[in-house]
Image (cartoon, rainbow, N blue to C red; front, side, top):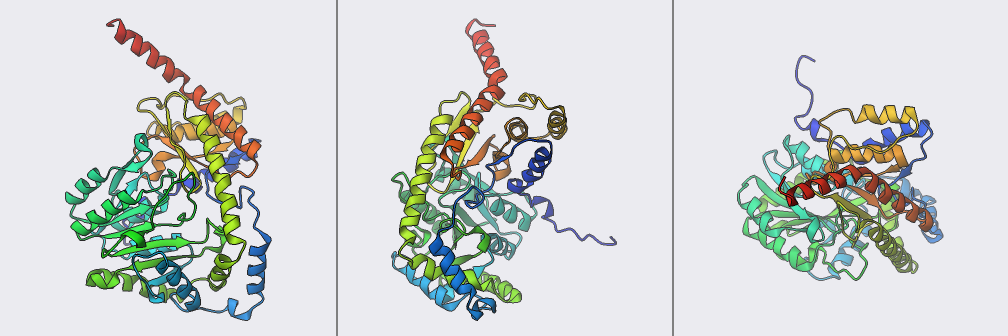
Length: 450
């Protein structure tokens, strides 16, 4: 081309959660039975959509207005319903004008970051959901700015370090929280949320809270929504129906804007997001119209309760199988439906492998992992996929320097779930065997002064 046409941040847009599917498909053609643990899709893992949900959607599909445009910000009746739902909690009060609908939170995320000034940064957790970190880095054309979540402290954020990084990086204009967290399954305690709000107030920042899993919390854990703790700080909460109902294929999410009147620059920024939505006309009408009927249906609460009980039970089963493995840190999931395990420092490298009996599978995996610059956890993920068919996501793809992997708690066949995690544990022990031996030799040498 006679002029540069590639966006400055194009190389920051990565999504390993789906990239690994291409490898899985190649292995499937070679006869490997694939067990997808990479994508948070309850339907794909066998969850049945209840008949009462199908009936609501079917009825709406018979109404002509479900096929037309809706208001740019979204169906007014639905926005009024959601505003009232928020206001019943206490905290920040919003009206329907403070809600904007999008075609899924992926659409919302790209707009929220895409219409920031390029030099304005949002500091994100590390690890964090890839769509956030990639979109934020892409808008700036620079690596993500992050604050650490600590696997040795139940994945809770280090708020002292967050404050320090905000203080010494004047480009930071906003703070992201994902609550409950993806990929770690951590739930932010109210006290930490209030500390983050205090940091935002002290440095004149706004807060983005991805709350797509806000009603998927179990094991007695408690948190607060952003609206309940934000006080006078400007903020944006991201919500949707793809996880708790579950209806990921609806691609229906929205943002709720708090304290838009508190800062003229924040108000102008929100207007730019709305103007971008106007260019698209609107988001999909039918799922928006379904929201009040779904949340108000008498079966909704019971359906949600049953799912939470299942995720809690599977969380315990997964944790029991991973927590005691040498070289692994695995915290019990507290919300959402993921678990992230971390390899202890130095226990994986670029030379470990798992036995691959099929020569074609072995050739494919060896070719994929021949790059010496490949992150060690990605190498593990490829060997795990070739050896067992279990498809997980490397932790380094979640904007993290930690080596590990993310798995889901979505399998509806509990016996199969247990077999999967037993196989995963066996594969980890086999993969880390050389490291364990090396550690023992090193410790023995140290003990005898060699």
